[in-house]
Image (cartoon, rainbow over all chains, first blue to last red; front, side, top):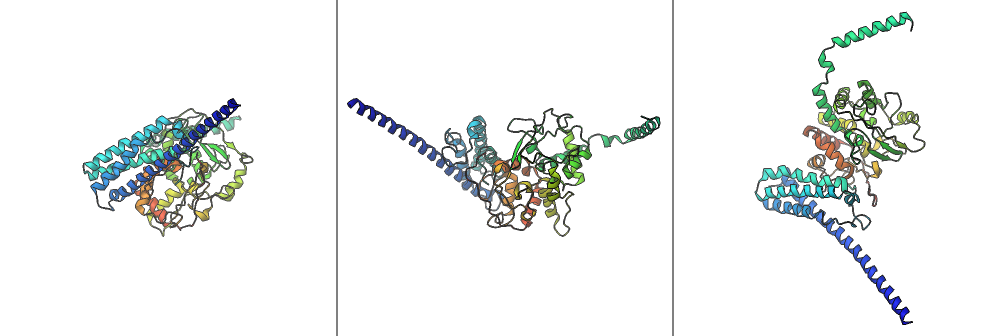
Length: 156
Length: 305
């Protein structure tokens, strides 16, 4: 009889641990998705700060330019790491397409392109090179669209 | 062949041969300027997108890209000058007829997935330039893939009725009362860049609803949501500045600092970003001149590729 109880307890324990593991994976994915979305929103905010300056609708503000370029550059460096496998549309509400993990090398290359272009942007901001910064801005923007074209569900 | 008929044929052929030999050489050599202008139109028309199998790593213009529609899946054909698999045996007149009338060299109708409904508006001069460019690209011997058309649309003669209902052939005619930039923008949007093929809603038979020009649709190609680009303040682009629209055409950036993806990302990269500054401004002027149409295009839930 004791053996039966032990057996049942063991099964219950395994089920409990398994349940926790699944739950944790789900929370993990949900957290990851939320973190990514926050980061992308911050990128959008950085773009909204920079656009009027680049267009000449707002005065050049070096400090704001450095800050926004830093946001973009930090995001770019994190991108591959915050897209671990198992955080696609099967794991939660996300626009990240499964093709990211089917074309991982290309996805990484596209993140790298943003890292490279945003590094140049940040450098120009730090140097106070207003004209150079404005000329570099579209190159960063193209890397955003370049990735969204293939790896984000259509929304616009 | 009777002798009399033979000699008549011979006489005609001799005259033609003589005429061909005496034509100035420049008329026969590809005109480099025409090719250059044609390449610009080729980009503005976004031809590459449908006629290249990018996902399958296919060579440019050799065909193969799948376009899923409610009427079936269509594969863009090879339009390189390969004589067997491409359009190498076509004449300029064949090409102009295909673009203007939606008719193949053998007389059969094209499915309107090939947007001749828009291209019909292109001028003869532009069509000739585009043809000159298409003759200049390297031929690729890649066979075409047959369309997978749903019943009963596989029966091409039905297209006669479709065209009668939905197609008005003929080049774009500018409106003399409007500024030249607006007319140029209208020509680019309506004819060359064929924006309405995705941005204008369609009726049950797949015809463009001309009363809702560019008002957007949830049923775009590949099931994508296509936004309203009329200047309606709440449901369209009415609150966008000209600079916002220019940034969209140049970079794909929207006023909220986001960047478009999906098909429009491709259109920005291949097409709108390659327009000249003047043409980009003309497109913006035209879009802002359109009557605003209220049409909220809601997003479908979780519809990845």
